[in-house]
Length: 128
Image 1 (tube, rainbow, N blue to C red):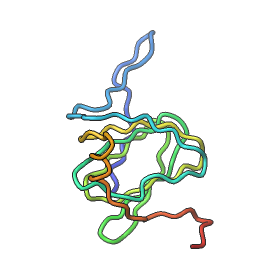
Image 2 (image 1 turned 180 degrees about the vertical axis):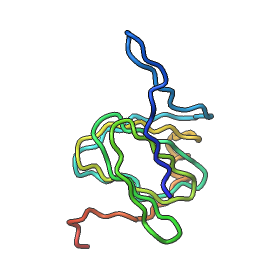
Image 3 (image 1 turned 135 degrees about the horizontal axis):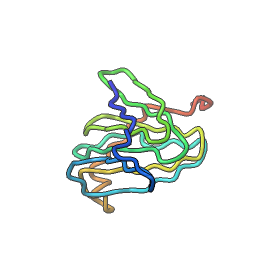
Image 4 (image 1 turned 90 degrees about the horizontal axis):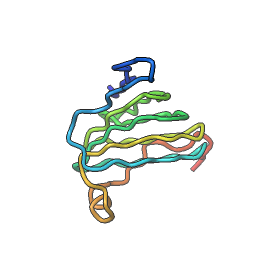
């Protein structure tokens, strides 16, 4: 089953709120901006694992688990964990901003060697 977490607010006062996101060893953080209709992912990572949180917009998230594609809607402040060796994809119905926190560095070359393409989601209007 997909591990989706709606991030709870940890502290609130007259200044605003604090939400603690992660207490894990992170090697890289990406700010990802996606246009409406875009698809990202359709791959898995040999070693990397990541947590992705939606900051604005929303997305459908897909994982291939035991030969079956699971899906979940991600809204603002929803976070999803993607373990290594799990094929995954995002489909953005609206412009979306998200943050990805990863367990491995993502500099060019390292990321490419760790990423294996595997198409698990095509746009519903794609007839190919």
